[in-house]
Length: 114
Image (cartoon, rainbow, N blue to C red):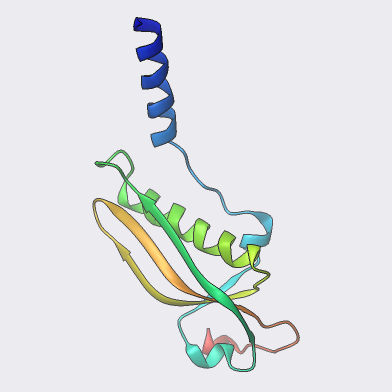
């Protein structure tokens, strides 16, 4: 019984320390907050990245980083190369970023619209 409780506690602790790294495809996704930047691009779907800190086990900056990585990774899974950020929020319990994924292949994006 003690061994089972120890194993459950160990799995729970390990799960609370899980991080999400940005994938190679996610690293190629460009983010913008400017809706004009995605004009003419193909809309692929709504995306969200979220990470709950579960009572403060993770620092706010870590939670924000993980949510951002999940946001970019989800965009990449849809085939996007640009993500339009529509909102983001971080507090002591969670970090979340939401927006839309776009395929802007063949469309020149100016730095001013990023």
